[in-house]
Image (cartoon, rainbow over all chains, first blue to last red; front, side, top):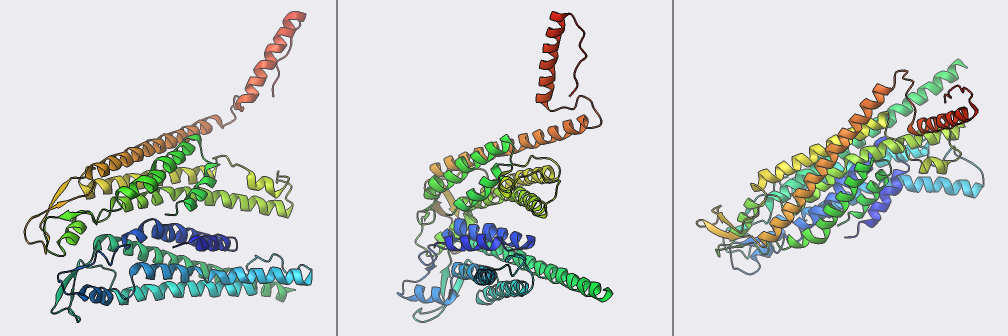
Length: 219
Length: 262
């Protein structure tokens, strides 16, 4: 999988972020993307080949694997990374729109196109809410699909064409569980960072607004 | 594997490191990351496929493999490298913050700002003093802690650093005690010992760097309070040279010359 585009996107987003936003980019980049590419992908590489059922009945293994892994952990993880990084594009588009407007009118309309105020602040807040939303949705999806974050060594399967209840063994369950826990922990850290950034921005701009009104009143 | 991005991030930190820090970075990239990517991955590539148990019982091999290798060596090393490289980011963030502040001062037209243009601020190398010293020292401390923790975890999980050829397994559904054979045990032992040795070298480098920084800190503190001998080295040398010249002049002209002060 070529993750170069995501890397470029995240580097671009870094320019228009607050301090906490930059920490979020670093966490996503190092503890999620890099761990995914460097370690996790290889663990799940042969998951289907190494999934073994105690039966010779053709088709039983395929059906059981499909039943227990409707969407593989690694694909859900990749989707989560993509969906969580994409709302930042809204901010990049908005800044590009501002710069375009300035060029079109040939005059300085904004103090700085990358400064987080006015419309860009709303876009930034919306992107933060979307990011947090996606994180939570994927965590819940993970939990519901796999009945928790634990990967069992053995699963019992009795779907046709398996003749009776058959024992099926998952490959590398402990290693998979360790990395899933790591993924969940990184996700939670990102949620906390997003919520802190949201509160910080709302607090900062409420104070700014309040002070402006206070000064106006006394003038 | 995409270690190139980590290389880009850490390369930036290299500029602001001490000499020992630069050696540490070189050791990290050449003897650890490169060896991991170029050699170690291939050695461990077929670890489960070629892990063979002396039984036809389906599932026994999977369960035994999972029992003996809760987390593969190669993944543990990858995690160790990621965690050990991360504290350097603290330094990178601190430097970026300082640069941002200087750029802000420059834009405001602050007269205290000694830079001629923004390019100079971008290229400037900061010395490790003040709050940057604390950030740098904490990053070295965390690096040490992570290295030690991972080495211990390795030792604890695999009962030493040797990879045995044969493992005896009796986890269910294996019918009895079953012999399981690990693929390429000698090659894996060699690489494990290599990685442990390089890890130890990195720990030593970090300890040396920490001692160097602490020594520098205490020396600076002892020189500070109104000590007249507190000059940078090159000025003292210039003074000595000038004094020698003056003595020569005074000797030749037989005049008394009062010593210079900087």
